[in-house]
Image 1 (cartoon, rainbow, N blue to C red):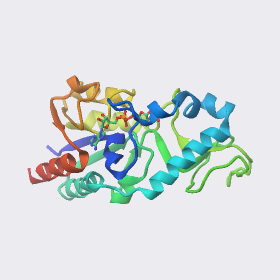
Image 2: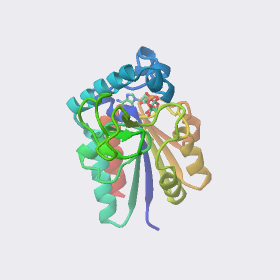
Image 3: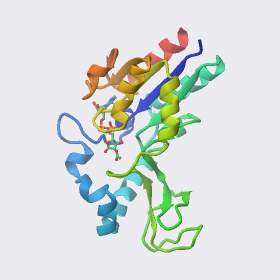
Image 4: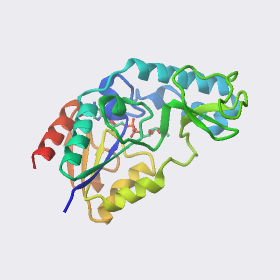
Length: 237
Ligand code: OAD
């Protein structure tokens, strides 16, 4: 039977690339330093768009200066290795950075959107956007000025590509979560869904996630070490 592997990544996979995580046990994650209700909700954007845009401009710059690490490269190797032998990988990330793509992953599902894209609130067009985003910018599709927003999912909004994700969960025989705290739904619920559908489940993380009890197996340590080791093992079987 072909292997269908579902990998879910979170901020922990990009931590060693210098991008901060959102929450950690020591209280210095992004959401401990910045209030998500003032920066990452549709209401915040409607109330104070300049502050929200400046927050995402700074994050876009950080991502531009960051480089993929060994864990991102290992997942790109996994995609190539599985495809060469007729197996399949579905890579779903909660991250809005493009480090998986820059490491060579060809198919990446960004369920929380992408920092390098802007969306027009008037016509819905989504386009690549790598510069700072301002209220004076016009949409290249409908020409409306001031309606562009980061193409990211904010609190209170539906994650993207849920139909594709649901289909991939149904065919998965192995589900692996890497560097995610298991605190944000619906992503945190994927493991229980995959398990109920018969998949084996494995957590690869720095420390136990909130939903750790839903996994059959756990590997703890920095992603730059644990992920390449897991990929080598898997491709050797
Ligand atoms: P979190 O910041 O909640 O969790 C990061 C996880 O990575 C934690 O479990 C850490 O232990 C782990 N970690 C930290 N450094 C690591 C390393 N070097 N190697 C391996 N693991 C490491 O990030 P997410 O779970 O991705 O959503 O957060 C989920 C969502 O919450 C984000 O996509 C974002 C946020 O609000 C939106 O903005 C919509």
